[in-house]
Amino acid sequence: MSSELEDRSLSLVILEPAILIVMTTACLIGNVVTCIAVYSKERLRTSSNLYVITLAISDAINASTVMPLTIGVLITGRWPYGEALCNVHAFFTLFSVYVSPTTMGLTAFNRYVRIVRPGHYSRIFNARQSKIYVAAIWLTVSGYALVPRLAGWTDYGFIPGYAVCTIVHPREAMKIAHYCIVVVFFFLLPLAVATFSYYKIFTMVNKHKINTNLAIKEECRISVREIHISKSLAIIVLAFALCWIPFWVVAMMQRFAPDTVVPRNVQLLCPFLLFFSSTINPFIYAGMNPSFRAEFRAILLCKFLKKPSVGVQAQEFGNSPSPLEISHQI
Image (cartoon, rainbow, N blue to C red):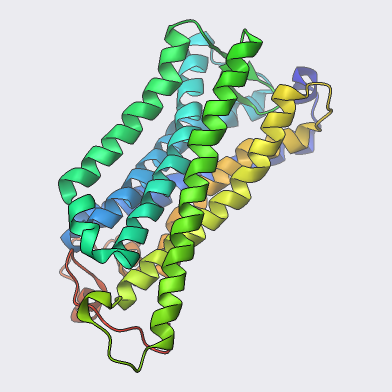
């Protein structure tokens, strides 16, 4: 596989880095703009958006550490940076692979409690608790990526097929244990939580649509804003699944069926899908959420320091919005 990376045609040497340069630029700009939008507007600093920002920061780290070094690999056809940077690259690659699904699962559960169990929301997801959840995820993921390497149970190395540095297992038993933990706790469990949560959310939404013209209790009302947020986050989870399932299928084949011949372009597609997943999230926020869309437009037009108009303010929301019944347009 190393020889295939070195012996690519000139067209691939140009095309592969060019695609990744575009994705890296879009990923970095989009996620940085997301962070600026929340930082510059107090009304966007809600407990729900804390998870959006967490995901944006992890994606921005991916765009500023993992993706640029991979561009260099695709240009040179080898790992040109030395062992130390390979270790750094591998850590942030693993961090990105582990933290994104976990954050999405927690975000989905946040929306589930907000929409389906609103009476428990302020107790489970107050500002302090939300920060604790995020810190726990980052510390757990960082520890799992780093401690086995420091203990000598795993190693980091360059994988030419993926064009990245990642984990290498010197012992078969550790490889089996590692993938059981990673696939179950950092992929299948968050995906199951997200699937269950959004199924319950949209079941609740459909019930409210049916009863739009009926009197319903105040505590059972769902605001239009909450529906927009849930829809945008559900689309992010769907895009995540479409990008990550092929990655894990190929990765498991490579690790546990080494005799299976996987073409180099299929292997390279795996990290590209993960990078693409990080890239599209801000555009989903902007496309589905009016509050983020207004702020993105203001930032990109360099107007975010100016006082927003009444129309823009009407699109923004705070921690305790006035509930609105779902209209027939939703």
